[in-house]
Length: 117
Image (cartoon, rainbow, N blue to C red; front, side):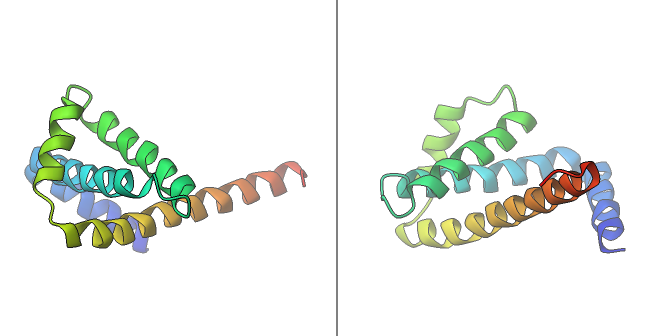
């Protein structure tokens, strides 16, 4: 039921202003990339940050394949304050973890259906 509500809301948002909605998603995804680039050199967060960079860049490129990434990332970073990096890293990390958990659950379901593992 919850998935149906989310899909319905997404469809309405897309129909009402799909371009603006996609731009908002792109802007928030770019903030994630910037936050993770700040963390990627820290050995404690390197692996998760690198995964986050690839995940959120993939989302951006899938949505905005003509976007000048270097320019967009530069503008995004310039628009962020020091306190934004931690806040965004936490928000984006939670999204990345949720996606990872979802993929693990799918993998488990597929493996059980095939009798593997």
